[in-house]
Length: 350
Image 1: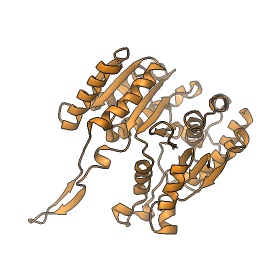
Image 2: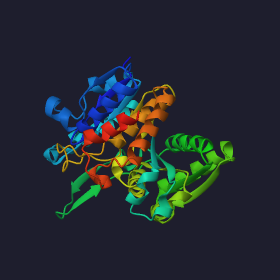
Image 3: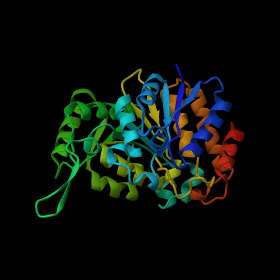
Image 4: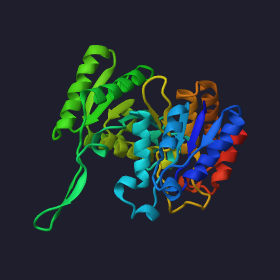
């Protein structure tokens, strides 16, 4: 069985995936690593954003690393064959429904945040985003032409009790190992799915997790509170769309979206999917200046959650801290190091 299946993707994806390989070679040289194509790279080679063979290999591996996908060169491709559809198909096929997105501000990066130092110093909270349901997957999804020549676009938000309950359970379990507090974010004031979300989370809390503090919060207020007082949060659970948006807001509070990793988990014993939350950044692709730390920290999460190597994961987090404390910075963090040089700083600290 392959330990780590790498899917570098597009844009800066291959560059940061290469840095993951370098870190793995030094920290865990015994790991077996295989590589495949995803997104635009797969479209160019196979005509589809992910092949059945690639998905089968992902499901058979212990952990999967996915780089960002997409770029303007594939804008004319039919929507159901766009690079992003490869990522959605991968998540669905692997059954990874709980997306863990940590928002951690490293001590030496407190001044890189757009928020005041006292607001972000010591920041450490986790967004748990439902990943395989909601508006990104709901049907019908279409653009239709009306009789009067107007066009109408339809996206459908759908959630079931099971989908909400299983991701909420992940959030409550995480909170028990942290500061024992969960914020559940939805729009129950205007959305039926939000109302069901609140009901299901409330019922689960009452039945199984009454020892954990539960706070219901409207998603728009959650966005405001993240930039007002982010340290009030411990674990936040929310749906696919709101999780996508709120985690990017949280990213800026930490200093750069180039710093934030993510893990997508399914049922126990199944492989996890790990990826930096930044996009493919085609404007800097090929320039050698992409921040590799989100990718490296995604590998750290893979070591911890799927590969059973918590000791090496702890070593890697410490090495990133040491590198940052030494002043190592890529352009997004206000420095001038190249992608490779930033990884060198981490490797030197291992």
